Length: 449
Image: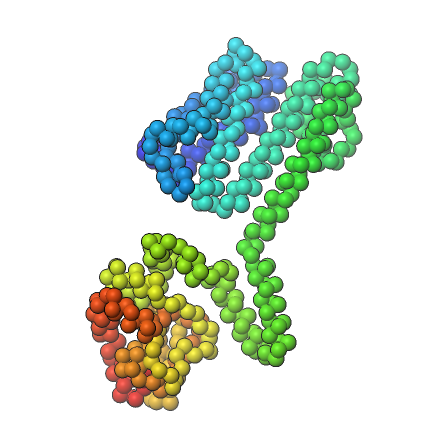
């Protein structure tokens, strides 16, 4: 595992290292309180805390060299990286990890190791900013960890109260747990914390002493806030799992009720529903064109190239075009979706469009006898070029047999682009050579599309 890979926050090596930090923080948050209150500490436990502290100090050294993102830019200056780390996580990392070595001299310093739990929040927050995973899912994980950690720490505090009150009024004495193991006492502390935070309160463990009553009041107040906060975030997470589809269904149902009330037939409404479902599957309820328009011009073509990689492979116009021309075409061509049975190009209309199919099947509608290969158009094929270049009116139509996704090259776009880049003419010539036989069949049959 090279240092360079560890310094890249998105690398698989760094992700594995971050997972190790989450494990270290989780062990500290949940197991350390149990060990601190245990009447005896084994050598294995001591070795564990030493190991986790060494790992934490190594992580601090890595953090001191890791570039960070600020305002959309990666900061690589060593001085600024160190300043950023000094102002954020350095104090908690150093105190939490060095506290282990001070514990033999100052037993109370063992509690400072709990600061190592902050590693979990740091990693989850970083992953949320990188947006490699659902931000809401990471947020739920962060809140859930915080809730469980706080519950565990409250349990440890409740057990500490019971162990340090020597009178028979101690809750441990009242519950008859004096002779039970440390694990049993801790389990009952967790039980009391959960029932109190959840406002269940079975009454089998109740506060009696002043210190217990004060602790119970604080815990009940915290429970109201914690569980309300947790439930709100769980509800938000469940709603996001729907990906907005419920709102989409409600909106589409309202639109269909309006159309039905105004006389639209059930058959048309059924076709509209199927088309809406297909479009939802393609775009998840967003307008792709609007998203692309809002991007900076400098990266529009790059984003479109990656989004439309599958489509570009099937379009001869893109295959023959140089990179700069292809980028212009990607920005200017109009993508379109046609439901089955709809006309893509109508007869008796001027030939002002060329259609490049990227998905689906379209067919020529004509009364002329033509070979089957000239009638159907599949991904990677195009039509409309005859009427386009001959500047004739189409005498036949082309209809979508399945859902058809296509790019439309319009005449005004073509004329403007020809003025800007004369290479477009050569690209169209090279593209037309691959379809000359089909065009000859159509012309011999008197079909112009």
